[in-house]
Image 1 (cartoon, rainbow, N blue to C red):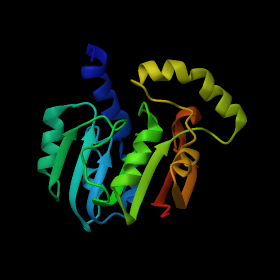
Image 2: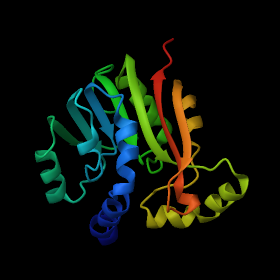
Image 3: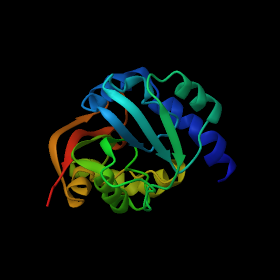
Image 4: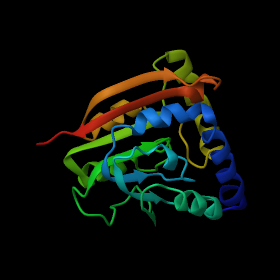
Length: 208
C-alpha cells in the first residue's frame, strides 16, 4: 500500500461514509439480520452501532487494516462480540459453508476486484434460510447518468482505491444465484448523482 491508500484514503472514506445522513440507511439495511453475521468490507467499522439486538456475533473481514486505533475503539464499544479477519474477499474464505445466518455488504461490491467470486463465497457461507443484505452504490438506470459514470470510472478507481461507479448491483447479485426479495432504488441526498445511485435490499440463496 502507498501513503495515500494507507493514510489518506481511509480517513476520506470514514468521513464521507460516516456522516449522520447515512445512519438511517444503515439502520434500515441491517434491520433483518440476526444471530451470527458475516460482514464483508468492514472498513472502519461504521456499521457497528446499527446492527440490531438480534445479532449475537459478528465476523468482519476486510483486505486492508484501516485506522486501527479508531476501529479498535468502535469494536470495544460494540454490543456483540466482533472477530476481525484481514482477508481478500475475491478469494475463497477460510470459513465453513453455511456458517452464517446473515451476510452484509455496505458500499463494498463496488471495490472488490473479483466481485463474482466474492458473491459466490457469500452464497457458500450463508445458510439456506439465511439473508444477504446490501447497501451499495452503483450504475444508474438513466442512460445519461450511466454514460457519465462510465466516463469518470477510470478516475474514480484511482481516487477511490478500486471503487467502481458503474457496477449494476442487482444484476451481479442475481447472476450469483441469489433471489432478491426486496430492492429499493433511490438517490442519496446531497450527493452527485454519479455517486448517489443507491441499491438497498435483501436477497436469499437460490436453493437448487
